[in-house]
Image (cartoon, rainbow, N blue to C red):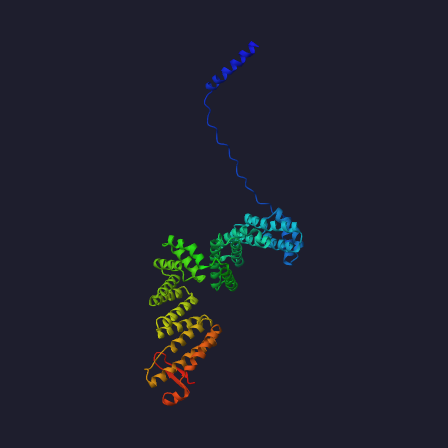
Length: 469
């Protein structure tokens, strides 16, 4: 017992001694990093090539059930064999999904549709014509087609990334679905997702507008129609409310007074959704105009000047906008600016000859575009200018001759309704109103020298021959 106790004490005393006498250790070496595993592409066998031919021929004949087995074999064993694995595969999976009513099978096929795009990115993401950005668009469309509202955020993320990558080369349906999906998300959270919807609409709408304006683009016509569709979606969404836009962009304008791209982007958005009476819009246009005048900034400054009652300045800005829009070949905008200038000249400045000059210019611009709509309002402006004119002194003879302007005015109202049915009701109302003021038979009888024959020349700045009636 005594010996055991002595051994325990000796060992206890020795431990600290040994610890103190221990040599300092070297720092531990960094752990060896495992070499990254490089996955080799699957080997493309003769069987793969044969199966590609089999499923591709079956898809061409719309025999999707027959195509599935050889396609699935290739998809699993040699997914790098051919791009048709994915273009045909999408058709196969879609057809089988529509054909089955089994929920489990539908879920399997939905997952397969999404997985297929990820695999396509891995093996064909560097394709120059259909790169990763394009494939992300296909993935976003797959989310929409197979999951509906269940995976809106995943769909939007893919669609947005695709459009950011592809830009104006984006697939039309990808652009449309980006707005559709973003609108669906916005409806679930109007307060939190308004800015997201506005951003997505602006991105997609700009690309659609560029595609529609490109005469060399085979999809220009459909892009134009889809642009109208997304415009309508945005308009009814409520996110386009001018006050809501002001909440979002007021600070952005203040923070970007020297950022021309941002200011122009904001100004174009406000113009697109017809919020051009907003102080935020005016501020963006004014700041952009100082940096570099554009048709949008000039038009915005014109609206601002008109709102302040400075119509002379408004006309001067519209003159700038017209010139700049002509340079950019935006002739529809040119016609609008010319009409606006005509309206202010007639309605506010009472410069009737100037108003007619701008109105005729707008008619010529629209005529060059082959558009009748829009010409009618210009003819109405001209007619109103004529009807507002007093060419002769207010003596007995002059009072009769002054009524001849109503013949010339009604001529323009008749022309307006003939060429542009959209103004027919307004033109008819003016015809009814002003025809009451024609010179009477008795008045014409009192001035036989002036009213001989069937026609009459209305002089002064009007200078037109009209029919006596």
